Length: 397
Image 1: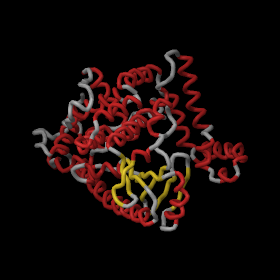
Image 2: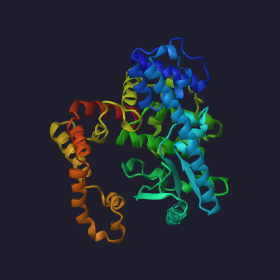
Image 3: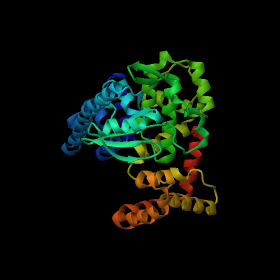
Image 4: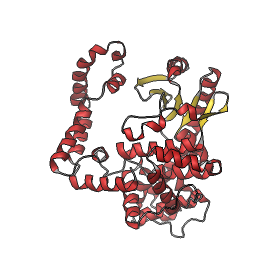
């Protein structure tokens, strides 16, 4: 493991456990260190432990800026969450806050868990009522899709989900079909999931990002933070049953091992059977996660790599799989096209005519971005896909 990554992990561990920081806090390469911290969602979290004399003025100020951005975003997002909760409760609409909106409250300080969108779940039959409610209070509905409605207000982004499951693998379809059966009231119409199911959902979401783009170190830390906070509430037998039903037992074991080793987050050994990762698997996994960064935004990480994990081992199948990925970009599903072209909701027969409009947008209006994506897809090498595929299988994905 490279020295700058070791330092990043040591600092994160110290922050999360209120421990003394490592004696040496000077990175080997300060620019690489900052990039790793930012790409993995940790730059604002570790800043309080950094010493100005260990960095150039430029890099130290960059860390300081991220720290302030974390704080400012937390204040804005907390205001929006409070407003949304009030609107939905007064309207009598059941809802569950998801992912970062829930997890940030479990960190030692809320600002430490940065997030982009505010995600919440409502019942499918309430979706139209939510649209009327939010648009009537200044939230601009930017797009609609099968997975979520996307709103913007004062540079805050909100995703309202009518379902938890995103169709990317039938392997996980069964486990998230009835989330409201797992919801319990917190106050008025605000709900939260039962702990076992919530952990299952967080693991599923992590799996989805492994397959669709990439994950960063903070995504792994989220699981440890959640479990440490809720461990006493866990029904361990029920958790084991849910994990087995969701084909997530081995993956969960590996994620818990990573949290123990990387961040010092210990969990009751009885939650799952004793499990350790081999040194080789541990090193490969940490390197992959750190390189990919949050949502696969790491420098030099090819996000199309994960989309080709399921391809065959011979060159012919590898080329076929690239063509399938390319085809999915050029010809999105009907549901995806509806989110891009709302007119299809009322006039679905216009679907064949919207594809030429999409081609025009990709080729003319978004030409540079489109060519960059196609180049990235073309540059995925066969041996890299096979290495990642082997890693995913060992992790239990």
